Image (cartoon, rainbow, N blue to C red; front, side):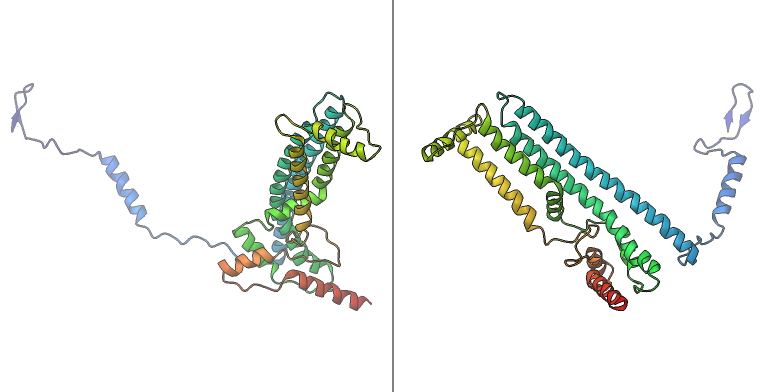
Length: 311
């Protein structure tokens, strides 16, 4: 018991550690507990089997989306090529505009164009990811549909598409991408820069005379002296340029046999298209599927059978 000072009465001792909970909160907590004890219904599973009309609609929208993605990356490839062409043209205009302008601006621009080449090769690999899916849809889904059963329907294209959607990856190597972009555009730019550099050394500040064997020796002396860049002697600059251009040609022609890219138009005689190769290897190792027959062989067999039947 304790005395109430204000009233002078005695009241019962209350435990100071007791928390008085309002009745409204108790009712709310009881309601929440009761609702949580109700059995939960199982989530509705997404149906996997679609009607033919629904499946065709989904494939059309999926195809349009992949086309848009591949077009975006294709435009980025064109942008990088435009950068290389514009910088090369501006550099050559500057170098040949006056005999006093230095010739080493051309090697500097060559380095810049090389950077653009590697950037475009990386973009080309991304472009091939989407273009590969487009080719799979065209050959596995649309081609049998439009051929009136001349081409047998392919039962593997959907598995390859689903495997690539689960684990997207590059379908071509960096060297193949560099080689393709070199042969398509950049090889000609490098040749133009090399010839322009040699012409700049020859004609500025005045053309080097060449009439006899003695003049030829004098020609190379003058040429190497003009090719000097700072502390680097002329023979060193010429050697570096020759090694660089030889490497460019070697990479361009040594990657001719790399044909993992499926979106390029290749001659029929050397048709080696297999867009499912990388996806099949991944599916065989990760999903336990058996690697199917190479798509290129199947495509050639189909084309031969079609030509024989028409003949």
